[in-house]
Length: 333
Ligand code: NDP
Image (tube, rainbow, N blue to C red):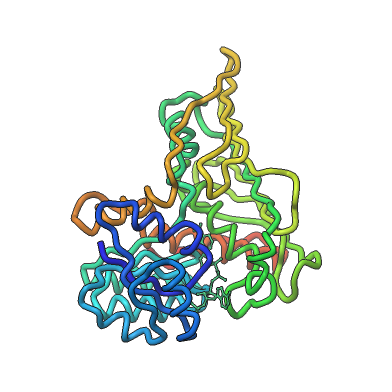
């Protein structure tokens, strides 16, 4: 696979370039930045053949098979639509767009063009989450009653830019982290949140956007979900718990980019530590994307998955703003 990077981003630098190169004969052929100087320095630093500042320049390269979009969130929609029009497969960062309608338009455009379009939700690729899902599927905890998601972290200083002060670029903890939690809950429960209640806070880390959020979701099965997302918490660690009629899964340190954590299963028989694979989350996502392009299977998180996680985040934002319970509107997808 020959990749074009749309966005000279931190996530590409820290995880995705290595992931692309680790799969088959994966090659990163070009990188786009809004600044020609930055495109050049980023390309040099990461040993990428071309750094360009013009999207058409990158998209008109017939040697590029797929693009990975990791610009700030308000750019995802126009860049994805242009890439699809140019016949490129697209792996797009979350949130897919600034609103559900745009995200649906992206998914539909790729479908019409016969192209693979996927969302980079990394957590469903984690060995820890695959093991949790397997335990649920195997009936180890019986019928699921509730889920609790602990995703309050401290945003590292090098990421404290647009995320904490630029609503126009899609900043705020709801578009940043609630989407991941929505995708992870959907992955495990295989159903879509129906209704949400929420409160958010801007506790001083940035300006103009929320930096913390707590919400409660009702699932069609009757299961309840409780989530906590934040940019301001240095010490709690993350976690994911699924409680059922026959047992509980309590996982710690699993809402993370690294293949780490611990999972405990508690049932009437006692306590058990669940083992899991420690593979790279992003490499698995890229491998499944490449397989899908080759006609084998589907991407780990599809475009529809990205629309749905965004729809939940939109509902949480609206519930926090209005103080009312909000039904999740999936836009008919
Ligand atoms: P960055 O802030 O690192 O990059 C976003 C844009 O900011 C880049 O495209 C770049 O613009 C510009 N930029 C970055 N660094 C600099 C710099 N030093 N000087 C000037 N401009 C700079 O964002 P992230 O990598 O954290 O996030 C990018 C996207 O990826 C977001 O949509 C985010 O939600 C998503 N993300 C997903 C994760 C996941 O695990 N799935 C994890 C982290 C982020 P230009 O390209 O024009 O140079």
